[in-house]
Image 1: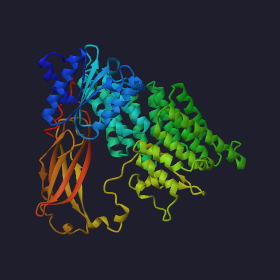
Image 2: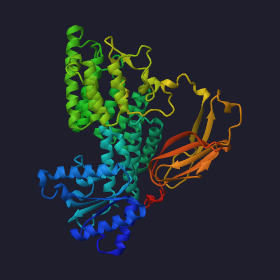
Image 3: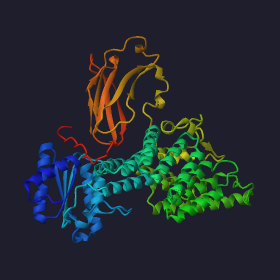
Image 4: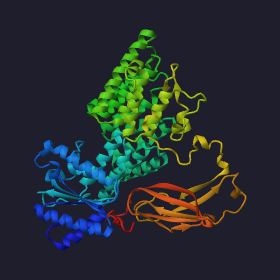
Length: 596
């Protein structure tokens, strides 16, 4: 759409920008477009009290490649400059001179290399306003997310790619915008896939209960719209949740595979077959060699490099950990010293093949785990590189996987004298999973397979090593309870706050003092009342204005002394609403920076 040249369109553009925080303007001569962008930026900046930053693509060499830069390098320079501004503080950013081809809708393929896509990626996690001016853009180019459903599907694709790469942090902002696009378009199928990906993202981040709830909701929505492949994927992800406790559920994975096959989803069936094989690979007598070969053939048929890479990874891992049996009732000619050497060489070839495919598929998560297992199972490979641990730790660090870094630390340090897992692992993984951790005679860890399925964050309140001499029963804790099952946008949900003293705390035998609990929303939501008294049963009403993950902060104070006793933050996932007729509705406007 072109807003240029009409005062009433200027007001409409300003409202659109405040709602979306993103506006694409085109279909006008350079001078008119630039003047219009400046006018919108000034209005929003003056009201919100924000600075304005302006970039022209031509200044980075985009139009003619001056200063020795290719158009792609110039685009990267603009994105990086904008990224640097966005992360510092909220502001209004104007990027003008974006070529028409780069200002089209977000690409639907994996090539996602347009300048606009890069700007959106940099902008997604910020609180800034972004205005994009497109040169010679076709009339009708709309603000993003557009009123059409295509943008929502493209955002879902990008979020899924981030999850596949092992970087779920980047998926959250994309999913929030995808949900809005699908809601505006009235696309229930798109919303179901968005909820599914939210659940998958929560599983990857180790938030098992949130993942289970969202995946159940997604499965029911898939059934409601007749999306059989989606139902199969949701069943598979629910089955994978069991691996986090160290006890996989092969029967549920087999059922997911059957669902995929009945739906005609060959790729989904291949993934379910892989998960089923991995869940049973360590069972005595299981024909893992045959099954991994079959899975690899399935992935080749659908040209899925990432699936092939993970198949090679787990096949190599099984070879490196077995005593020579392949589950067919014998040693298969691989027993003895010579057989051990042959298995090691075969495992090395598989690890190397997996590494090459993970690099081609741009999956740092799989690459880091393969590098780690390859180094542990192949001493010659490890000793060729004295910095092997630092290199692997660097790859994990690049995607924010602190749990992966903790496994590298464990591999480098060896088993602890008291047999207890390190704090950085104990605070992230269930005890049942860590109990399956083993060690070879050479002192190398046999890391549970399920450890690579998640990137769990530290559990809130988990005692640090220095706290072990201060038992929990001598302290008081803040307990938050969500009283309504599934929060949805624009519907109040009740949250109860309690101060729970331990048995050894003075408050356990005396009435709780009149403390004050102050509630603050850290996102696009309202919380009421602002204060509550835990002794009287503090209850708050949380009203989110958009789907996605919302953070709330609760501060417990002693009003008599003005002392802050404890401050806790909670993260609540809000799923898209599902109104009866499901008519397209405009999303609620986001609060301006001044009101926030």
